[in-house]
Image (tube, rainbow, N blue to C red; front, top):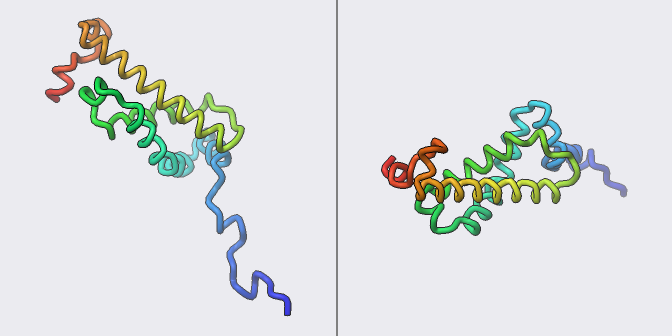
Amino acid sequence: MTMTSADHDLPPLSDALPPDTTVLVLAAQQGDRKALEVLFERYLPRVRRIVALRTGRRLEILYEQEDLVQQALMRAFADLHSYEKRSQAQFRNWIARCVEHELADLARKGAAAKRGGALRAGVPPPDRVLAS
């Protein structure tokens, strides 16, 4: 006896699998808010791990870790239009690079604030960041 998918009431394959990252990226680049939310949820744990591993003491003093995660993801997704659709692995690498660049930028701003350059750059000095 041959069984078919109708015998088991299985959903079509496209409904059973989550959307591919490259499909989500393309949809998000075209303005699909739901696709952007799914990407955010999908990559949030990865970004949290990157931030936890890459955060130095200087950034830990200036910022809460979850604030760094949010800032890094928001910046990456703001630049999503610059990502060229290739593969899920390349998107993961692109997100990781965006996060690392954002952390480096924030560390530089923190160092400038400590040296007094923050006033010229419009960045609050570390003591004001900690007080808020």
